[in-house]
Image (cartoon, rainbow, N blue to C red; front, side, top):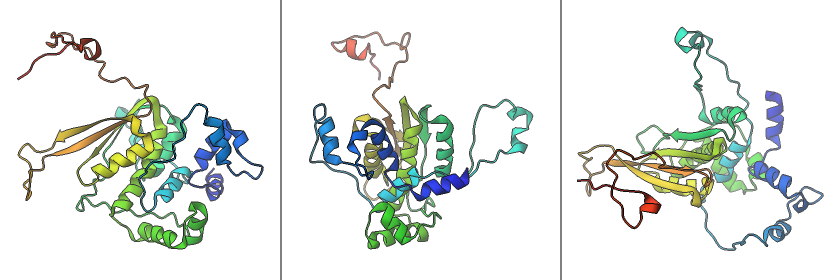
Length: 283
Protein backbone atom coordinates (compact mmCIF):
# COMPACT_ATOMS: atom_id res chain seq x y z
CA UNK A 1 0.00 0.00 0.00
CA UNK A 2 2.80 2.42 0.89
CA UNK A 3 4.59 1.51 -2.34
CA UNK A 4 1.43 2.34 -4.30
CA UNK A 5 1.14 5.68 -2.49
CA UNK A 6 4.75 6.55 -3.28
CA UNK A 7 4.24 5.75 -6.96
CA UNK A 8 1.02 7.77 -7.05
CA UNK A 9 2.73 10.73 -5.39
CA UNK A 10 5.34 10.81 -8.13
CA UNK A 11 2.62 11.76 -10.61
CA UNK A 12 0.68 14.07 -8.30
CA UNK A 13 0.55 17.81 -8.96
CA UNK A 14 -1.01 20.59 -6.85
CA UNK A 15 -4.21 20.49 -8.91
CA UNK A 16 -4.53 16.73 -9.46
CA UNK A 17 -7.62 16.48 -7.26
CA UNK A 18 -9.34 19.42 -8.93
CA UNK A 19 -8.59 18.11 -12.41
CA UNK A 20 -10.02 14.71 -11.48
CA UNK A 21 -13.29 16.37 -10.44
CA UNK A 22 -13.42 18.38 -13.66
CA UNK A 23 -12.68 15.31 -15.77
CA UNK A 24 -15.51 13.43 -14.09
CA UNK A 25 -18.09 16.15 -14.74
CA UNK A 26 -16.70 17.85 -17.87
CA UNK A 27 -14.94 15.13 -19.90
CA UNK A 28 -15.52 17.03 -23.15
CA UNK A 29 -13.23 19.80 -21.89
CA UNK A 30 -10.18 17.53 -21.95
CA UNK A 31 -8.20 17.01 -25.12
CA UNK A 32 -6.77 13.71 -26.36
CA UNK A 33 -3.41 14.43 -24.75
CA UNK A 34 -5.10 15.03 -21.38
CA UNK A 35 -4.72 18.82 -21.38
CA UNK A 36 -7.62 20.96 -20.16
CA UNK A 37 -9.39 23.24 -22.63
CA UNK A 38 -10.20 26.35 -20.57
CA UNK A 39 -12.07 28.10 -23.36
CA UNK A 40 -14.37 25.14 -23.92
CA UNK A 41 -14.98 24.96 -20.18
CA UNK A 42 -15.97 28.63 -20.16
CA UNK A 43 -18.40 27.94 -23.00
CA UNK A 44 -19.87 24.99 -21.08
CA UNK A 45 -20.76 27.09 -18.04
CA UNK A 46 -21.32 30.49 -19.64
CA UNK A 47 -25.10 30.09 -19.90
CA UNK A 48 -25.56 29.61 -16.16
CA UNK A 49 -22.50 31.27 -14.63
CA UNK A 50 -21.12 34.77 -14.81
CA UNK A 51 -17.45 34.36 -15.75
CA UNK A 52 -15.58 37.12 -13.92
CA UNK A 53 -12.46 38.51 -15.55
CA UNK A 54 -11.28 40.57 -12.58
CA UNK A 55 -10.63 39.51 -9.03
CA UNK A 56 -8.00 39.14 -6.35
CA UNK A 57 -6.40 36.31 -4.44
CA UNK A 58 -4.05 35.68 -1.56
CA UNK A 59 -0.55 34.88 -2.80
CA UNK A 60 2.43 33.79 -0.75
CA UNK A 61 5.65 31.87 -1.23
CA UNK A 62 4.94 28.15 -1.23
CA UNK A 63 1.19 28.28 -1.88
CA UNK A 64 1.37 25.78 -4.74
CA UNK A 65 3.78 23.68 -2.67
CA UNK A 66 1.26 23.52 0.18
CA UNK A 67 -1.43 22.44 -2.27
CA UNK A 68 0.90 19.72 -3.53
CA UNK A 69 1.41 18.44 0.03
CA UNK A 70 -2.35 18.28 0.51
CA UNK A 71 -2.76 16.35 -2.74
CA UNK A 72 -0.23 13.59 -2.08
CA UNK A 73 -1.01 10.36 -0.25
CA UNK A 74 0.49 9.76 3.17
CA UNK A 75 3.20 7.11 3.34
CA UNK A 76 2.84 6.64 7.10
CA UNK A 77 1.07 3.83 8.93
CA UNK A 78 -1.08 4.14 12.05
CA UNK A 79 0.09 1.83 14.81
CA UNK A 80 -2.48 1.19 17.58
CA UNK A 81 -1.33 1.76 21.14
CA UNK A 82 -2.22 -1.70 22.39
CA UNK A 83 -1.26 -0.99 26.00
CA UNK A 84 -3.51 2.06 26.17
CA UNK A 85 -6.39 0.42 24.30
CA UNK A 86 -6.35 -2.65 26.54
CA UNK A 87 -7.03 -0.68 29.73
CA UNK A 88 -10.55 -1.36 31.09
CA UNK A 89 -11.56 2.31 30.94
CA UNK A 90 -10.63 2.42 27.24
CA UNK A 91 -12.08 -0.91 26.15
CA UNK A 92 -15.33 0.51 24.76
CA UNK A 93 -14.09 3.93 23.75
CA UNK A 94 -15.36 5.29 20.45
CA UNK A 95 -12.77 8.07 20.38
CA UNK A 96 -9.74 8.31 18.11
CA UNK A 97 -6.55 10.02 19.24
CA UNK A 98 -3.78 10.28 16.65
CA UNK A 99 -0.31 11.28 17.77
CA UNK A 100 2.04 12.48 15.04
CA UNK A 101 2.25 14.99 12.21
CA UNK A 102 -1.24 16.45 11.84
CA UNK A 103 -0.87 16.56 8.05
CA UNK A 104 -0.56 12.77 7.98
CA UNK A 105 -3.26 12.48 10.64
CA UNK A 106 -5.74 14.39 8.50
CA UNK A 107 -4.98 12.21 5.49
CA UNK A 108 -5.59 9.06 7.53
CA UNK A 109 -8.88 10.47 8.85
CA UNK A 110 -10.04 11.28 5.31
CA UNK A 111 -9.87 7.60 4.38
CA UNK A 112 -12.74 6.88 6.78
CA UNK A 113 -14.38 10.24 7.45
CA UNK A 114 -14.38 12.11 4.15
CA UNK A 115 -17.39 14.43 4.23
CA UNK A 116 -18.55 12.98 7.55
CA UNK A 117 -17.52 15.50 10.23
CA UNK A 118 -20.08 17.96 11.59
CA UNK A 119 -17.77 20.23 13.59
CA UNK A 120 -14.01 20.83 13.65
CA UNK A 121 -12.10 22.98 16.14
CA UNK A 122 -8.41 23.71 15.71
CA UNK A 123 -6.02 25.75 17.81
CA UNK A 124 -3.04 26.32 15.50
CA UNK A 125 0.23 28.05 16.37
CA UNK A 126 -0.38 31.80 16.64
CA UNK A 127 3.07 32.59 15.22
CA UNK A 128 3.73 35.14 17.94
CA UNK A 129 7.48 34.81 17.67
CA UNK A 130 7.63 33.24 21.11
CA UNK A 131 5.27 30.27 20.71
CA UNK A 132 7.93 28.02 19.20
CA UNK A 133 6.40 27.81 15.73
CA UNK A 134 8.93 27.02 13.02
CA UNK A 135 7.85 25.44 9.75
CA UNK A 136 10.11 22.79 8.27
CA UNK A 137 9.49 19.46 6.57
CA UNK A 138 11.39 16.45 5.29
CA UNK A 139 9.64 15.60 2.02
CA UNK A 140 12.97 15.81 0.19
CA UNK A 141 11.78 17.28 -3.10
CA UNK A 142 14.53 18.38 -5.44
CA UNK A 143 14.65 21.77 -7.10
CA UNK A 144 14.01 20.17 -10.48
CA UNK A 145 10.99 18.23 -9.19
CA UNK A 146 9.39 21.36 -7.76
CA UNK A 147 9.98 23.26 -10.98
CA UNK A 148 8.17 20.54 -12.90
CA UNK A 149 5.32 19.87 -10.47
CA UNK A 150 4.62 23.47 -9.48
CA UNK A 151 5.45 25.15 -12.79
CA UNK A 152 7.66 27.67 -10.99
CA UNK A 153 10.99 29.25 -11.83
CA UNK A 154 14.30 27.88 -10.61
CA UNK A 155 14.62 30.84 -8.25
CA UNK A 156 11.20 30.26 -6.66
CA UNK A 157 11.86 26.53 -6.30
CA UNK A 158 15.11 27.33 -4.49
CA UNK A 159 13.34 29.79 -2.18
CA UNK A 160 10.67 27.22 -1.31
CA UNK A 161 13.27 24.56 -0.56
CA UNK A 162 15.28 27.00 1.52
CA UNK A 163 12.21 27.91 3.55
CA UNK A 164 11.22 24.29 4.18
CA UNK A 165 14.69 23.00 5.01
CA UNK A 166 16.15 25.70 7.22
CA UNK A 167 12.90 26.26 9.10
CA UNK A 168 11.06 29.55 9.19
CA UNK A 169 8.48 31.44 11.23
CA UNK A 170 7.69 33.97 8.50
CA UNK A 171 4.15 34.77 7.43
CA UNK A 172 4.68 32.73 4.26
CA UNK A 173 5.88 29.74 6.27
CA UNK A 174 2.85 29.94 8.57
CA UNK A 175 0.47 30.27 5.62
CA UNK A 176 2.11 27.30 3.90
CA UNK A 177 1.68 25.24 7.07
CA UNK A 178 -1.98 26.21 7.47
CA UNK A 179 -3.06 26.04 3.82
CA UNK A 180 -2.40 22.34 3.27
CA UNK A 181 -4.11 21.43 6.54
CA UNK A 182 -7.19 23.58 5.93
CA UNK A 183 -7.63 22.06 2.47
CA UNK A 184 -7.76 18.61 4.06
CA UNK A 185 -9.99 19.77 6.92
CA UNK A 186 -12.51 21.11 4.42
CA UNK A 187 -12.79 17.67 2.82
CA UNK A 188 -13.59 16.17 6.23
CA UNK A 189 -16.61 18.44 6.76
CA UNK A 190 -20.17 17.43 5.98
CA UNK A 191 -22.20 19.77 3.79
CA UNK A 192 -23.75 21.21 6.96
CA UNK A 193 -20.44 21.15 8.85
CA UNK A 194 -18.58 24.07 10.39
CA UNK A 195 -15.00 24.74 11.45
CA UNK A 196 -13.83 26.97 14.30
CA UNK A 197 -10.24 28.26 14.39
CA UNK A 198 -8.57 30.12 17.25
CA UNK A 199 -6.10 32.89 16.40
CA UNK A 200 -4.78 36.22 17.67
CA UNK A 201 -3.68 39.50 16.11
CA UNK A 202 -0.42 38.12 14.69
CA UNK A 203 -2.07 36.09 11.91
CA UNK A 204 -5.78 36.94 12.17
CA UNK A 205 -5.86 38.99 8.97
CA UNK A 206 -3.93 36.36 7.02
CA UNK A 207 -6.07 33.53 8.38
CA UNK A 208 -9.27 35.31 7.30
CA UNK A 209 -7.98 35.67 3.74
CA UNK A 210 -6.70 32.10 3.74
CA UNK A 211 -10.06 30.72 4.87
CA UNK A 212 -11.83 32.83 2.25
CA UNK A 213 -9.59 31.09 -0.28
CA UNK A 214 -10.21 27.57 1.06
CA UNK A 215 -13.87 27.67 2.08
CA UNK A 216 -15.12 30.56 -0.05
CA UNK A 217 -15.79 34.08 1.14
CA UNK A 218 -19.52 33.37 1.06
CA UNK A 219 -19.07 30.65 3.68
CA UNK A 220 -17.67 32.95 6.35
CA UNK A 221 -20.02 32.70 9.34
CA UNK A 222 -18.58 34.96 12.03
CA UNK A 223 -15.52 36.12 13.90
CA UNK A 224 -15.92 35.91 17.66
CA UNK A 225 -13.78 37.99 20.01
CA UNK A 226 -12.75 36.06 23.13
CA UNK A 227 -11.62 37.87 26.26
CA UNK A 228 -8.35 36.36 27.42
CA UNK A 229 -7.50 38.72 30.27
CA UNK A 230 -9.97 41.14 31.81
CA UNK A 231 -7.16 43.38 32.98
CA UNK A 232 -5.55 43.39 29.57
CA UNK A 233 -1.88 43.29 28.73
CA UNK A 234 -0.08 46.60 28.88
CA UNK A 235 1.25 47.87 25.56
CA UNK A 236 2.44 51.26 24.44
CA UNK A 237 -0.91 52.15 22.89
CA UNK A 238 -3.79 50.01 24.12
CA UNK A 239 -4.57 47.07 26.39
CA UNK A 240 -4.59 43.79 24.47
CA UNK A 241 -7.07 41.48 26.14
CA UNK A 242 -8.65 39.31 23.47
CA UNK A 243 -8.04 36.83 20.70
CA UNK A 244 -10.43 35.52 18.03
CA UNK A 245 -12.41 32.51 16.91
CA UNK A 246 -13.13 32.33 13.18
CA UNK A 247 -16.06 30.24 12.00
CA UNK A 248 -16.61 28.97 8.45
CA UNK A 249 -19.14 26.55 7.00
CA UNK A 250 -18.73 23.97 4.24
CA UNK A 251 -21.92 25.03 2.41
CA UNK A 252 -25.01 27.12 3.09
CA UNK A 253 -26.84 24.02 4.41
CA UNK A 254 -25.73 24.99 7.93
CA UNK A 255 -28.37 25.95 10.49
CA UNK A 256 -27.13 27.77 13.57
CA UNK A 257 -28.84 29.36 16.59
CA UNK A 258 -31.76 26.94 16.55
CA UNK A 259 -31.79 26.35 20.32
CA UNK A 260 -35.09 27.11 22.02
CA UNK A 261 -35.13 30.29 24.13
CA UNK A 262 -38.42 29.43 25.80
CA UNK A 263 -38.42 30.18 29.51
CA UNK A 264 -35.32 32.39 29.36
CA UNK A 265 -37.10 35.74 29.41
CA UNK A 266 -37.23 36.28 25.65
CA UNK A 267 -40.80 37.61 25.48
CA UNK A 268 -40.51 41.03 23.81
CA UNK A 269 -41.33 41.44 20.14
CA UNK A 270 -40.64 44.10 17.53
CA UNK A 271 -40.98 44.46 13.76
CA UNK A 272 -38.20 41.88 13.25
CA UNK A 273 -39.78 39.13 15.34
CA UNK A 274 -40.52 36.85 12.38
CA UNK A 275 -36.93 37.07 11.20
CA UNK A 276 -35.06 37.14 14.52
CA UNK A 277 -37.54 35.88 17.10
CA UNK A 278 -38.43 37.49 20.45
CA UNK A 279 -35.88 39.37 22.55
CA UNK A 280 -35.29 40.59 26.08
CA UNK A 281 -33.70 43.66 27.63
CA UNK A 282 -30.59 43.16 29.74
CA UNK A 283 -28.53 45.48 31.91
